[in-house]
Image 1 (cartoon, rainbow, N blue to C red):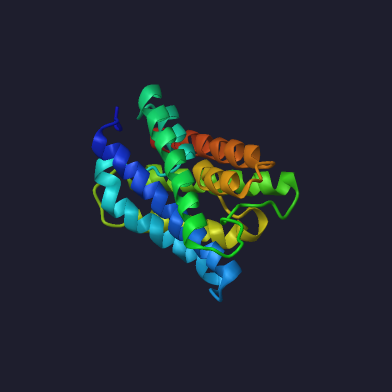
Image 2: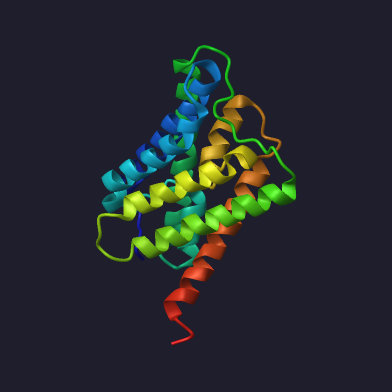
Length: 217
């Protein structure tokens, strides 16, 4: 298996996912309670992902996302046991980041909760397509040693947020949505942000293997 659990990998997944939620969702909170321009939010999410992928990629693979971990499981790169541990840590760290938001920001805010501002059909297609794109980028750019993988993955997150942020919040990540939703006390649409990113990452794995096997050649 490519990814296995260890103290280093679990700590890396905790810190990476925590940072994504703390800085990314924190920027949403600042746009609500302060004068931070909402146009900066996609770039804060993307930059956070890129930075912590470079820091922790060698320890855990820098999943920071249950949908990505499930994608790697489908691709037979992580076991069921290790996958469950990864996902548990990711969700715990997201909850911890949202809990810290409640302490740091005393004004009333939404915790950076993702919400659907379109139809379920349109929103589900948006989340599936962008998570497919994200998973495909991850699988393609992390196969070889290079210095662009973090920028490529962070760029995929930024582009997705710019494209569908106004529609669904561009979650692409169940943990990123679960933490804020639970702390905010509104979990009515939590199923949406669990189901469709997982479907998207699964499709990304299928597409990757189709490309890798090169049936035309």
